[in-house]
Amino acid sequence: MKFSSYILGCGGYLPKKIITNNDLPKKLNTTDEWIKTRTGICQRYIANKKQLNSDLGFEAAKKAIKNSKINNTEIDLVIVATSTPDHTFPSTATKIQGKLGIKKGFAFDVQAACSGFIYAISIADNYIKNKQARNALVIGSEVFSRILDWNDRSTCVLFGDGAGAIVLTGRKKNSGIISTELYSDGRFYDLLYVDGGVASNQKAGHIKMKGKEVFRHAVEKLTNCIETNLKKNNLKKNDIDWIIPHQANKRIMDMTANKLGISKDKVLVTVDKYANTSSASIPLTLDHALSKKIVKRGDIIVFEAIGGGLTWGCSILKY
Ligand code: UT7
Image (cartoon, rainbow, N blue to C red; front, top):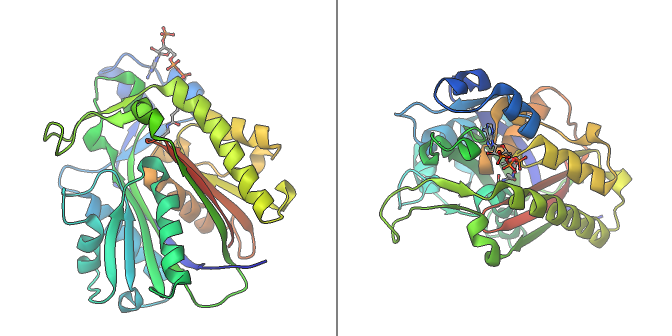
């Protein structure tokens, strides 16, 4: 089997403030019971008003670099996957690059909604394969609380803030990313979008989602994507040790595993604690699994995500 970039280390950061499901019915027509049974979510972390996306991403990045046992100065590529950047420009990635004191290489943001982290690692992996970068810092960082309509119970209960990061390296090891599949289909643009933007109304806007339709696409598209990727690499479902899905809804994760014929026990879940943190959810879940010593070196892992666009994709790797 051929491996490309190798994950040196991972880190995560969550803001201090927790909002539990039981805090929500005070201002919203909802219940803990509805949220828990329909999504698996019990609580979410919310950034304070002074905390920017770059602050969360910076904290996660510092931990990932420390766990990678390298110096900031060895990083020559920074990619931030986000839909909630600090500013229209420059990128949140350049801001974090500056905060880390990195003076070489290049940095930019990637916007692929909740699939952003998969897109970002695929891009970083290709730069590493082409020898345009040696050590890439790939961050998923979001402050979705800033684009929620807190009066819309069908969306505001679903999301939380947070950041996760990994360091990918080109140094040869007998493991790493095996292959990534990326897809998008813009015909489904209006199933999940934010009704604002620089060119449309100069406002940040709020999330709008046709949840039931996104749910249906999610299970079907993620299953097909994982099956295609496994087949391309002559891998069998039994070879998978862990699936680390984008954390949108426990029912989507369970139904996808069921359709694939993979045990739910192999699906790592943090949506109960963190809710949906969009492009941060996969590195945050990896960080959680590493800190609990669930995931070990040599395990075969599938990262998978779907989000606005629609965009979706999956990576298979040997950790
Ligand atoms: O991260 C990017 C990708 N996003 C996703 O993958 C999200 C995909 N979609 C979903 O996870 C689910 O569709 C939701 C969790 C968003 C919704 O669950 P659902 O089972 O599809 O519910 P629904 O939208 O069909 O709503 C069922 C009922 C409705 O009431 P009626 O019309 O049946 O009387 C809603 O008004 O539940 C109601 N409802 C709520 N009730 C209490 C919707 N939100 C809430 C709420 N509390 N927060």
